[in-house]
Image: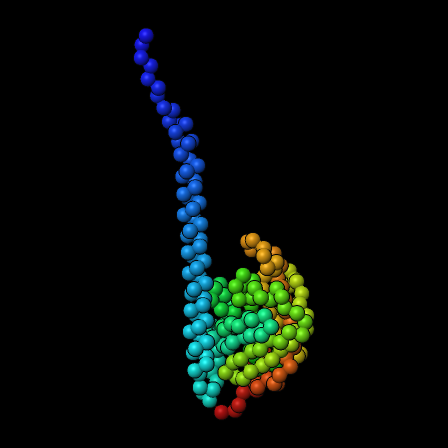
Length: 217
């Protein structure tokens, strides 16, 4: 009787290896994602600590200089929620990775009008999911300290820019994505509107400054 030699089927062998290969690919991707997330969190924490240290060491007697894109403006707190973060001029993706952003076309704290701050829902503004009416928001800048009281919250579409418009009162608007636990780009925006209850503005708003008559040389 002739001797029969079994020959392995290459396709069957490759099919058996695919699940193992997929396991290691997904494992590597998961490890990379965790390392990257850790890096982002650590970098944001480091930036916040450095900017807080610099902000606290600034001589308040120095002459005011206009803020520029990417420069730290001040510190915001929501005491009841334990929210404490440095906010920076601008709202680019790079800025929002490590700080709360101030929308440049809106008023600055200390000016009359609507101050608008924005941040990611899964980082600095995550505590806003528990904010309530009458909560206080504290803003500290080189121009002084300002206190706001929450009047209302609302969920709007991304195209609704009415909440960003200038107001006749001294207001603070916080903007983040919604829902808070949505996976991927969130379809809505969560708005917090607060009214200033502290000191009056120390200088006119950007819009008002633009219409001020220039001094005759």
